Image (cartoon, rainbow over all chains, first blue to last red):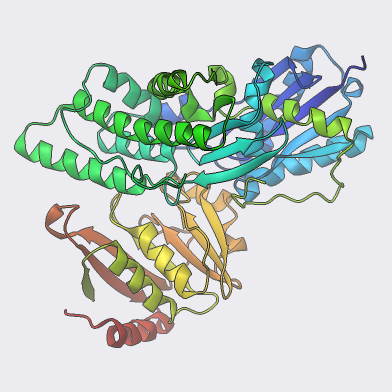
Length: 336
Length: 159
C-alpha cells in the first residue's frame, strides 16, 4: 500500500499548530504552540489572537513537526490547511504559509474546514465507527450537531443561535472568579458541589429541533449568582455543578434525540468541550440506554490541533481533491 | 440620552430602529456587562439592515461578517486586553470602510479606534437580570449627533 504523508497546518484561532499524519491515521508528529500558560499568567482571558503571533510561530512549529516526525520536507505528499471558519487574519497566516510551502515543494494543497477537522479527530483514534453517526461539535466557538452518513458525508442539523457552549463556560467561570479556561475550572468546582441545590433553566429542551441557546442560561446563572451573593448564601461548588448540569443536560439530550431520529449507529463528541468529563458521562449514559457506542477523541485531539487537519485531508488526497494556489480564507461559520 | 428597554424582543426592536439611521462607514461601540444584551441589540441592527441569518456572539472568533444592505462587521473585544492586540487584528481594514462596524466590549479609549462614533452603554435596571435594561446613548462627532436627534424622535425617549 502506498504511504501518504500529509502536513497539516492550523491557525484558525489562538493556536499555531502543525502535524504530519500518515494515511489519515498514524500521527507522526503533532505540535501545538499552546498559549494557555500565557493566559493564566495574565489572570484571565488574554488570547494570543494576533496574527503577528502566528507569523512568529509558524515556521518554528512546522519545522518542529518535521523534526519530531523524523522527516525532511521532500518526504510529504501534500500540504493541508484550515481555511475556514475563523479569524481572517489568523487563517491567512496558515493559508499563505501552506500555499508557499506547497508551491515551493511542488506538492498539492488541500483546504480543510476546521469543524470537519474536529469531527475527524474521532477517526484518527477509532476505526470501528458505524454510520449513520450523530456528532456533537462543541468548543469555545462552536456548538453544532451533525449527522454523518460516511467519513466525509455530513449534514448540519442544528447549532447555537447565540453563544457557544465553551464561551458560556468561560464567561460564567469568569463571573464567578473561577479562572480560565472556564470549562476545566467549572468542572473542577462542580466535583465538590451538587447539582439541583440551585435551579437553572434547560434552555431549548422543550423544542423539538436541534438548535441550542446558551446566552439565556449564562444570564440566568449570573442573575442567580448575584442574588445568592446578596443574601450571603452563595455556594460556588453547588452553583458550578448546577450550571454544568444545565448545559450538559441540553447538549446530551439533544444529541441522543438526534441519534434516535436519524437512526444513528454511533454517537460522537468533538471539540474542546468534548473534554468535559460530565458531558462524556451523561452522553454515555443516554447512549447506553439506546445501545449505541459513544466515541470521543483523547484530550489532546479535542482541543485545536493540526493532526485532525492532516488526517482529514487523506481521503481528499486519494480523490485528488486539491485546492488551487489562489486558495482564500473565509471567516464564515458555515460548516460545509 | 437614555431609554429603558423591557425585554430582549424590545431590544431587537430598538436595534431595528437604530439600523434605519446607520449608513455605510458608520461605527457603533457597545459596552456593558456580560449578559446585558449587546449581541441582542446587534441582532436587531442586523435585521434592520436586511440580514436574516444567524447573529451569534463573536467572542471566540473576534469578528463575524454579515451581508446586509452593506457588510456588517460584528466585533467583540471581550478577549482582548492589550492595545497592540487591537492593532494586530487589522482593524483599519474594516473601520470606516464600506459597511458598518458594530464593536462590543470596546473598553475605554484606544489609539487604534476612531473617536467619532455612536456610543451605546447598556446596564441592568436595579442590578437585576430579570428586569429591564437601561440603554444610554452618546454621540461623538456631528454626524452621530444628528443620528441621535433622529433616534430620539423615533424611539420615544422618556428621559
